[in-house]
Length: 608
Ligand code: AGP
Image 1 (cartoon, helix red, strand yellow):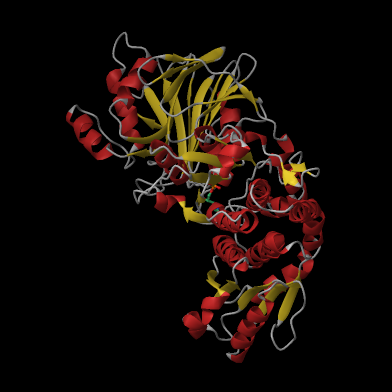
Image 2 (cartoon, rainbow, N blue to C red):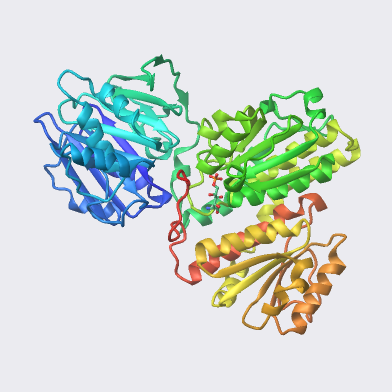
């Protein structure tokens, strides 16, 4: 999705802007641009449809300025083109704006501004902002006042950075629903929509709140609200390692992140297992045992893979704590006037912590008095700040658009929460110990699965040319099937359907043929016989079967099998999912896809 960077300081801004934009490439974009204001006056702009490298190649040596803003655009209003790329300027070329989000009343504002003489040069909603700020930046009005007055007329979401040719000593930024982070350097300041763009330059950051603006100068910043009240913000320190933002010798971020999972799971577990009481210690919940006992239901909210991880989490909570739990797409929940109950615990799941639908669902639940926890990877993100407490994943930054290590860590975090809940209710110490030791064994068991990467690559190449694939699993296996299908389609573009294995004979069995192979989750649990019967039904219709199992099924039931180590039955889904990540990755590589930047997708979906 769109990315913002900005710099002000003693150096030339352009190298930082270009490097920062390159760091944001992983979020997905179709055009890029920069604007700088120099001491000699005026704003210089370069923008292109295409990659950041194309932009860099288009920038002449004389393109210099100590204050600058940059943007990667993911088209929403208007096609990807040079003209629609940001920054956008007003007609006097005094004000330049970069914007993430959507101006919902852009059409109405455009008519009014055009009536006052503004000439529009793009189809974007963002250009409206440039003209609007310029209209307010009259003689004697400070830039921050002009931005504040302009934003008072805007309906919608935004993260913006504004440059003024007449005030190159400052950049004004604002946030409403789309992240803006200030980075504090030595007599220089950075701005980005994502810390990954500025972490090489500074670890001291301030995340703006929704409805907050900031004036950023080389020697510091001042934050204030939309009604001009000064706010006081303390910087926080980014503790992720810088090398997390490089591929570290792997061909793709996705492969690196799949292989990081033993370490990321260890970090999610670190300091949270309490062997003495056979439970989990979760300091950030902000709920004591008595309050937790009053919870009658759990509702989990997330989007895409975060929603599927929530489905696994709901099953863990029901199984270990016997509390009814259900996962729902946050993108649906927020629109359906949900009933919010005092004795329900709402849990928002998000890797980025910035997914707009999930944030809106949290706000809706809280607005109606719901208690909301977050299971979030990005410390200090909007969702983390909005929640009443929660669990940080500590999985490290996830760069690849396809979520893998954050997905696994989310399920591990739910296992910890379910264990904690369970031990407060009726989970016996013996069962608690069973789960604690299974959790401790997970990193080593994930390593065992990863060691099969070459064999899985061979299988993936064999199955990748199918027109589609079916993924099936029963009960605990069903969310695994859903996530496996999601991973395959998002990075390989192979059509994939997930079904509960039990539902096959109620319709989709009609699809089974040699052209539509099935990936079947076949754990050695109480449903093994049922699953083997389903495999027989597929084979009887000449379907090909790739089983992911604890024990190799008879050859007549499965054409191929990937074996995974056994955990405890409740935790088996975690391990069954890892081969499906590798299957999707290797299928995408076999099909020569752009694995880390799949078409049409963005890492954080910060628009509605
Ligand atoms: C995962 O592979 C997807 N790219 C996507 O479904 C993602 O999980 C979803 O958009 C939610 O993102 P979040 O965890 O950052 O909120």
